[in-house]
Image (tube, rainbow, N blue to C red; front, side):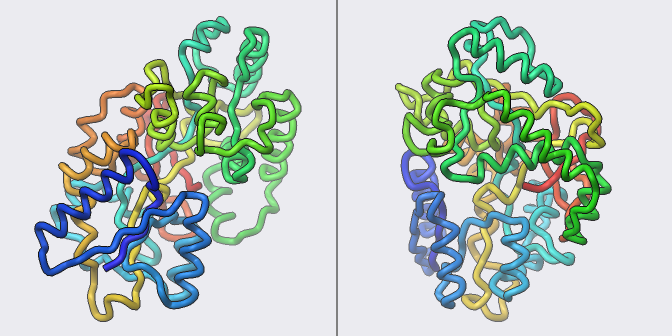
Length: 373
């Protein structure tokens, strides 16, 4: 078998190497060829491999529209029948819904990765910010305080495009109702005025110049000069990102250890927005959820390598390697960081053109809604 993932260095790569080696030791008749690919290169290489009919057996799955397109093209295996009762007990139903299309599961979830602002408590305190912002007006006030304190307010790696897109996604989540988002995902019609409002909100926020100097040419996750690196080295105060960010930040600190003053707050509310309070944008599929190329296992209902990825011991090791919330409910007990513990309690709220999705709860809502990347 072949396996592609995007952990090209450090503890993440070591985790996958060990996980594969342990699986091979337990299954001596199976040999897995592992290929680690830099995150920004993975999508292009994978699509080329899928289109050429030479795709890896198991690979990191982004989910969302990309996964739907792969299913439509007949490039993914239906693994529903291979999911055991023990796996369903350890992984919430909501996490599987994020990998489900028309009642069939096409990927094995590994982590829950809600988005929000990761920030330096020390830099906030230095600027006189005593509480995380709860409204966009408060966020803009925090930006001005940070500027006055000589700190770049928000790190943005817009060179890679997708981090900049987050701002429209999150503003739309606050501007549009859950019903509108659900219907738009089905119809692909953006007639509701909330979509325009979201764009105007992004434009107004960007006009306050909240981002780091040179953000248009800043990468997201590669090196000390990336947006994650700016947070890691206290060169910027906060970054809007998914819950994989603590691990990336930790790999870029001077001692390559987790940033001790890191914390998290959800994207603030927008005045006049119809979005449901507590809604969080994020993904189960943004983790290395593993899809399987259908051509490699004709007649099989599931690959032999999917279930081990969500075993408790493997999930605890995943959390330690990536500093990201594991999807296994038992392994979530190992999470101690305040900026990660709220992320590892997923709830279910159907939403998408597929068959629903789930995302992690926020800190401020007893019944948070959830959305897709």
